[in-house]
Image (cartoon, rainbow, N blue to C red; front, top):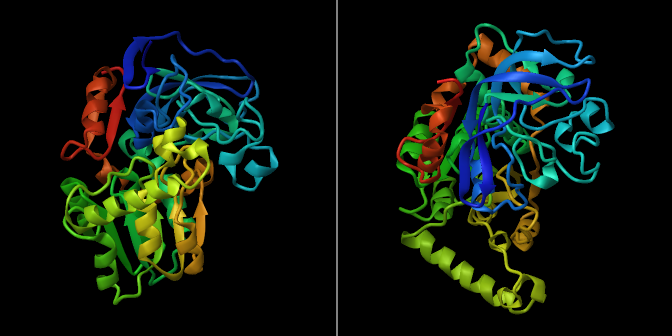
Length: 404
């Protein structure tokens, strides 16, 4: 079968790979009818999220049809149409029972303390072959797979596999209450759904920060007040728009690969912060000092996080759902502490939210397909990756369709 395979940093290929097989009684084999490209996939390819094992199939978003089930999968039938949660949980450990599927004790074969198990990730996440393929083995399918109603299309359902649940989770842990003013940093797919999720939770105003025109225009269409960080200083504008108070809640929806400003007042501030950071490095342990030979880009301060802390009102809440690697060490903790901020973060517990979001889509409460901008055949996946990585105009979210 065909699949998108990681071979090394900057090197992915569409390969012929072996068909997946049932390995455990709780497995299922799903024929993938829709997959997608996510910004998290780019972290793996760029090397900002290290530890990828060559030969791993990429992708953690999938919709498909059950073709085979293990003996302990007792709630599904061959032929069922399902959405696949991106993170994997066993369903019976204390964490899964409490809704923390992303912290499952059993799903990750590296052990209970190894972290979140998910499809198409680095070695420390399993690794599990991903979903940008014609077929996939789904562990703990009796718990993970969520059956889809006939009225929910593949194009809608693929957005329920990861980015809509992640965004809703981010809005929830931001502690948004009716009337709140919310800032969202990053208007990629997760940021767009964070806008929609904040609206569902009753936000009074939403300020959306990015610099790519097509993304800002999509955010404006959703009702957000948009800020181009290359045209103006986002923190200054947020202060102006909120009467000098700041926002009640902020969501970092972009993570470690956030683009820094390249012009205007925000660029000057970012350059000054970078210089100050370099000076600080000279005073701390050699293992984090570039001169010590153990430097990693993930050690640099995140511009999105810095802006979010600066933009928040006193006693506000920061939600972090953008992806950061374990190597990332720096955060404006002093400013956050002095403002009495609450900080919530983590990987989304997808299985907790997907059934509710499926119901919302089926009832017409929300139509996630408006965020989907491209539908490409799996055979064109490499070209689609390049366009998505380059942030070409209009490329917000890409669906990959096997068999076409």
